[in-house]
Length: 186
Image 1 (cartoon, one colour):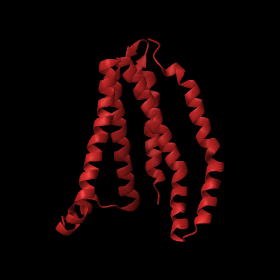
Image 2 (cartoon, one colour):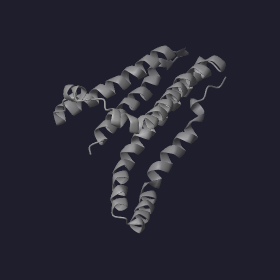
Image 3 (cartoon, one colour):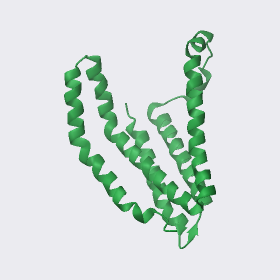
Image 4 (cartoon, helix red, strand yellow):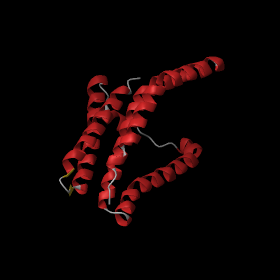
């Protein structure tokens, strides 16, 4: 119910990563390794902060969670195909996100990896903001589906699109228009 807490920590982490570009890439210096390490450290810190908040706010017992996990052959036999397809998707997703920077660095150069990292950080930042914006609507959608009110759902979706269009379109257009200065001229 309070997913906004995790979203806020992720947005703050994205802002820190974006602002850190000014430190790692300045005056002809391209500290891609330092930037990557710092970005990973910020992401880890955001995840740990979210866990600490869950522990303090909800008295969540992670030790009990870990000791309560049990294997069940019945559940395994019912879900193994789904699990293997999920594992395959996870592996390909990780490879995609790990290999893209390597391929860009090998064929285009380290400076383009830095530009790509800035773009990827901006994308993560917008995804976090849009997640905060649309998550309450996402939950409300289930209310209409559960009540089998398709007309109400259509009206609701139309209102969401009309109300949030400026909040979505304006930042995307702004970033698109200002993206040219982010590209490396050579």
